[in-house]
Image 1 (cartoon, helix red, strand yellow):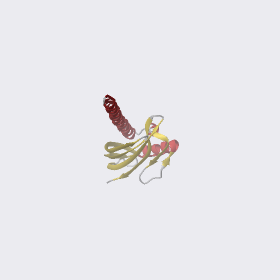
Image 2 (cartoon, rainbow, N blue to C red):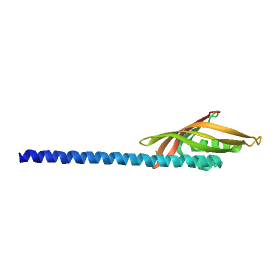
Image 3 (cartoon, one colour):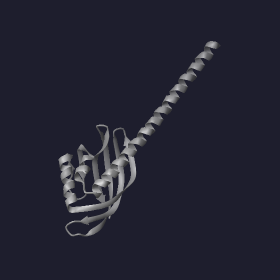
Length: 159
């Protein structure tokens, strides 16, 4: 009888330890996901700042080395040099004043995506005209050297 009681107590102790470990793993996983979401939100706000200040160098630095920028109505820019050239061209044509709205961030291991929308105005340098601008965006992020970066970015106009 004592032997059976000892086995039952040992089994309960082992099960309890396994459950605690599982709960700790779940808590750690949630904490890591929360931290990743905060890092991506910060990256998106930094990116918005590069758009509003026409900073092609900084915008380019937010992409992975093999990143792809897919602007609406223009060819895709692939890799650092093409991305920088695309932003230099865009910023030579317009000045943005936009706000980003994050609708969704989903993280799966070292990849993540975000769905956003943006609203604001665009000053067209050639004419001096300011027009309203509304877009929806899809970002794909990848960890590069331990840091979240933009791997793919696509947007299109909603108005």
